Image (tube, rainbow, N blue to C red; front, side):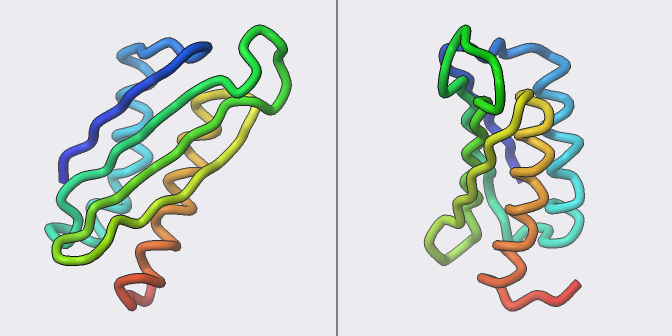
Length: 101
């Protein structure tokens, strides 16, 4: 499974953030294996410079042979938004693929 990360205004694309995203998505990769070809992670600050719960993470998983599965999370830090996004993505994929825990 390939993971691609894009950041927009208000979120710095760092090695630490990229490693964190990949770590959070490892469980998804272990659980669904080759059924998922790619996960796109988009991060942005909804209100740059204002603070608060404004870091948005949009994740899009591309399962082989079916439409993409997308989720979003909004948290106070990009790291938290990625963590919550990965949890939501795993649940959404389980529902879509009919996979039980």
